[in-house]
Image (cartoon, rainbow, N blue to C red; front, top):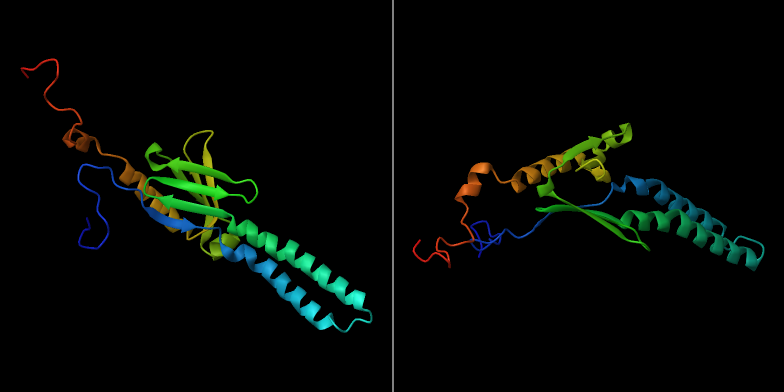
Length: 186
């Protein structure tokens, strides 16, 4: 069943389906210096390769350049790719790790406090650390999220939408019928 906007609509009487609101990664700014190092390594290797006096010097140069690219560019790229934040209509999911994966979830219905912290560099790029506090021992930090203010606003709206106002609970249809199996006369 679809509504006029073309979005799928849930059948009446069922809970709304969970939908993805946003998929985020940390700001790509962290890949700036590794990419500069990659360009420098490729430039130096291209300039020196073939100009060295011995063949083993060229092989050593290529081996060293490959190792430097692996350590200084590829590993930071993998670290950035393996940190993902997903915000749905019901929860916030933080996934991280490559060899050892970890996943944290926080339901909007629990209610929580959302704080944005920024350094001066993050302010220049409109990113920030979104800290989600749902209790004294449960803090979830979405590090260096792009458009941190928009993420905070979206989380506040999702928290409000997950809470049912007190007046609407009485108008919800009950799962029990008015007729009891024991008291037939009612």
